[in-house]
Length: 151
Image 1 (cartoon, rainbow, N blue to C red):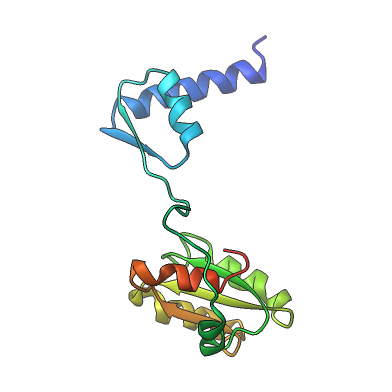
Image 2: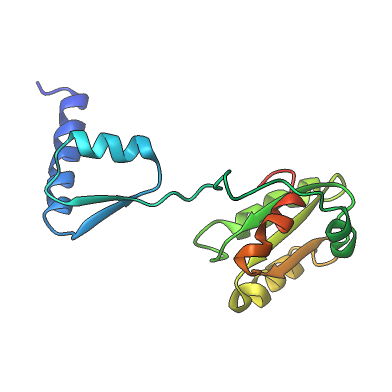
């Protein structure tokens, strides 16, 4: 009788073969993922595109003025990105309801998503406490990130 591990491994190997034969490349955000894929000697190129903060570029700044301008006085949760449903911003808003008295929430999202995020916050009764800001120029992003205690 075949074990669950062998069945699962066989399925994953078949899925991996199917995918790698049909794609032009793989994009991975973590170096460990790139290393793992390189060891497998897949028949496709693996590209490393980091999605984290580049510490050589980002220097935590004192953001007191911007925090005050945005009305952030408490511990601040933050999100930077797009896609209210694709990246779970709607879920973040629902979870935030439990913390609304203890923390602020700052969301930076593309201009096209601002109204959708504001509408979601309004439907959840959070429009008075959630700050939704259109994404800023990349050079100003560190200032906004400095306003967030958890990103």
